[in-house]
Amino acid sequence: MRLRLPAERPTEPPTGYKIAHPVLSQDGTRAGFTGVSLGGALPYGVLDDASCVYGRRHRPPARLCDCGFHCVHERGAAEAMLCTAEHRTALLLEVSVLGAYIRFERGFRYARQRVRTATAGPCACGATAVGLADAGWGRPGWLALAPVCAGCVRGRTSLSLAGFARLAGEGLRVGVRGGGTGAPSAESADAAEPGVPELVAEAALLQARLDWFQSQLARLGERGNGGVGRG
Image (tube, one colour):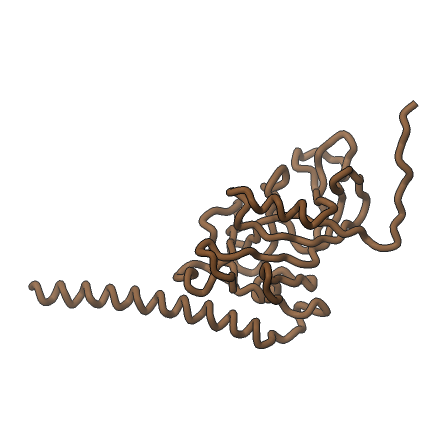
């Protein structure tokens, strides 16, 4: 006789934590996330349903499969995964576990989720991030992003934290580790007006890109003048 754990019927969705890389659609109109393990090939939105990565027709989370979203119970356990080299640029997500789920000792495997908050670490140079920029890799149709400061953005495709939150929608809040939020109000991501911190971050990214373009134009001008002089 196999013993089963009692079915859970929580009054509100359980909370979990995970890490994921932010992604931007190829046309620049949508933002989401891609996982760091089994389901990493399938980017997902802020509010989304899981699908079986093996293409099977059962509903996640199937007991005899590994499909479904995954998260851990403790924030510290998710933060520990950010220490590995391949995960340094990932974001820390706080999620609501929705739909059917299977509880394990360290976390959940479940059918549906809502990403409530996303927290970015520092830029690769060590400075506090003000946005997310092209990370140099991606998935088909999706460009992976990484935290970036105003000084390192240069000419790369980039979004402010608030801009990413607006594209992702569903009231997502995006912040930086050890700092304030860079997102619109959770009440309505579409209707909320950006505040002073968000506008400052947007201006910093725009100014950094403008400075980079001006430096490139100046360099091209110097080459052109040099060529005329030598002639």
